[in-house]
Length: 280
Image (cartoon, rainbow, N blue to C red; front, top):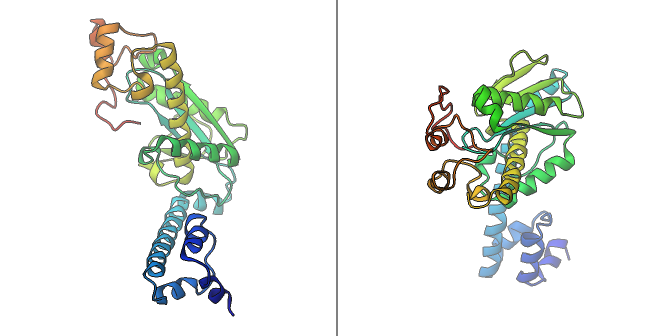
């Protein structure tokens, strides 16, 4: 009796647990055998297994595509390519946070994407933990609200990114950044529009920056209760703006941003850069 025939002697529940729930590798011929099986349950299991196989194939293709910028640089002789991205340009409170990540050559992580596309917070944390464990090096940098007010949000974002790169324990030999490049920085670099959805390294940095900033905002929520910082992470939601008006401006609020400026009754000359942009 062949292995496939032997497996078909098992219950469909056992096969479902083994190959669908536990995701054990499918033996050659099992999928075809299930599709030919007259039992309706076997055909249902075959459809589910084939759908998963197609999803896995599509994910593999997506991840290969996500490495194309890194692969090009590896083939040119670069070894330590750092992806760099930031989170927190749009909020009214808290720092702008950047991360830098150097990934092993050819490394892939299923589900890794631009952090804005990963809606589940727990899943983002899982991905961040995997990146931190397996990266060649990673680091974060930030610019506080006072620096944002002094420099403007764009320059503060660049400062946070520079700090993240400089904090890496392994010196990179090339940078890939989301949209920006770092002025007067002594390394080859490339800014990629929508790079957090086009480059594995930038996507990794995106996830690290987002999860780090979210964790810091939860800590600030414990320090400054009543503003909802753990929920909206400092973004200009209606409840946040109302809390500012009712409770006052905190030291972590960005005084150059419109709603905070209005609550203070002041008129700062700095424009609200990135206003209307998607939340990061």
